[in-house]
Image 1 (cartoon, helix red, strand yellow):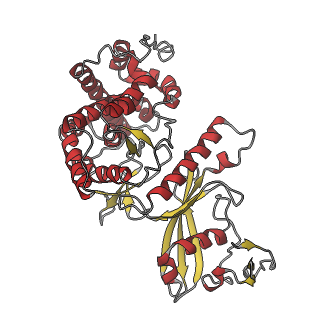
Image 2: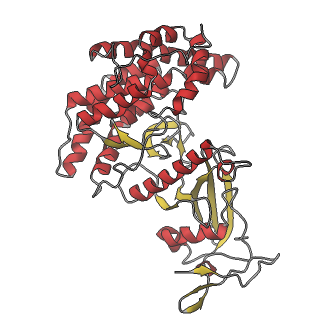
Image 3: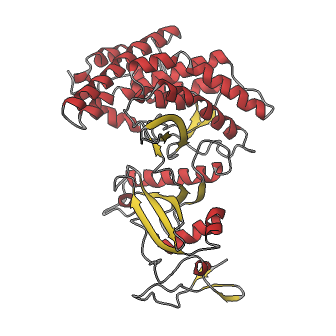
Length: 446
């Protein structure tokens, strides 16, 4: 076990390496043969992560064979990085890092760390700060759990939680330049939606076949079921209703749609009844699903990787695809894929299970129902889409985009009415049988 001891102070001309020691005495820093210390300031911080470049390079070197192979013939002469999360992410800050070698070879990777304003708050620690810590801790556990699986995710080189060294971070494969997204409220294609079914089925299958199911009972939902969305709805729903008057009539008729209890029914309770409780990404919106870029820079229909595991949970396996489709697909696209997604997903899941000499624990008809339930739960979240988009721009193009989102919402409402009737859920009540009140959501509308 190595511990750092400080024998050398970095000079202005370059940075000599701190010496390390183990039980047998002094030994050189492992990076001495890897980095040109006269050219790289390894004791500067990498952005606002709270970590020295030296520490990050050491962890990467220890856990990446490709980097070791590159450094066999060359030294790192420069380290460049840029923030690719817009300066401050919602919960995280993400940096693309480029290592340049003295033979002009290049190695790129990504560093993800908790957002600085939550790690080092200016005042007393808030509930949101604690949620960020919890989210990052969950993602670290998941990255270490899935890093050796053959699924559609980046390669995770190293991930650690908050400790005495720093706030915690994740080192992963870089897809920044070769990937694109449709965005949370963008317009996905029929092919993109269909093409997600197979990798999602394979992901769900592989998680179900990890020995001991280490994820079981480890990841509670703090977003989709436990009510964090309710505060968002209280703020945005009145504005959305101004843009889509049908919303008010819909939730007055079916007030339970807005409750955590109904979300729990759609995401977890029915899945448990059908022996279909799987590990879910749970936040696979259009910004968290990477697709390959074409040569012209446009986003293709080929899925590349799922990212951002901070709100993972257990539940309905059809929820992940519904969470992508509902916000991104225009109304006509969603209606086209809704009819085929359950079968595409189920066929892929059967094939994935067959490779494990196993059988899917629920039926094709149940998959159809689980997808319908997921669509209904996504309708609840999608009621805020018009307000969210309308407040983020102006001009004729933005006006047209808002009109598309309004149409998405209207057709989701129409289709949810049909699903409620299809399964006899028009008078659904929570387990306690109490009637749901919508007063707190519509206080500003009347």
